[in-house]
Image (cartoon, rainbow, N blue to C red; front, side, top):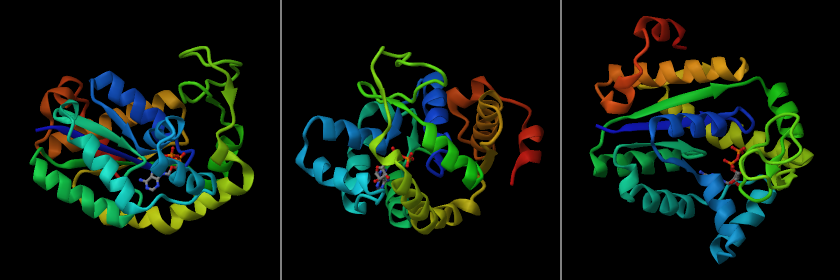
Length: 237
Ligand code: ADP
């Protein structure tokens, strides 16, 4: 069974950072719809350029386009042992489509992690966020160039004041219902994203391992780093 993880959270919650770290450590592909769209825009893909206008306004790209991108990406063999989704699903329609894709794959349940951060902290983080203009990596605090590739650090076009407000509104309207869609599943877990990054990482790891183990989908990756399930259990929201 695969270790299939969805990292949920509002813009600025740190889900992309946690998704990237977890995927690297477990040797799974991180599938970020935001990153895929930004790369396709850089390559001048016409569909992506249209999507780029919506992204710059903080609006969502249409379900059909995004679902097609994810379906195609999940058909690649590297996602067979599992994957970490970042930025998808963002609407209930996308979540329903993902369930269908998972049924077709027959590769075990989805582990859903919701990284929760209070709104004023989200606004503060997004206001000070810088990313690398070359590779898109989030900048480390206090650095003047990208630690991954040395590229120039810039403000992401959709991290500007009013657009941030719009993205948070869109999150509440379109994406919060996705959490309700998943909340009753035994593999749904909540992590406090306002803690120190190492603590968030620790909680994310133990929640994922616990959820995967309790669903019988532990697989090789999760089985290697099992933590005390009762500790994770007591933090379940
Ligand atoms: P963040 O999580 O910080 O808001 P992302 O990089 O995940 O940023 O996404 C940036 C933008 O890309 C979104 O505001 C939206 O316009 C578009 N996008 C990414 N993923 C999706 C998705 N699953 N559905 C619709 N639009 C998406």
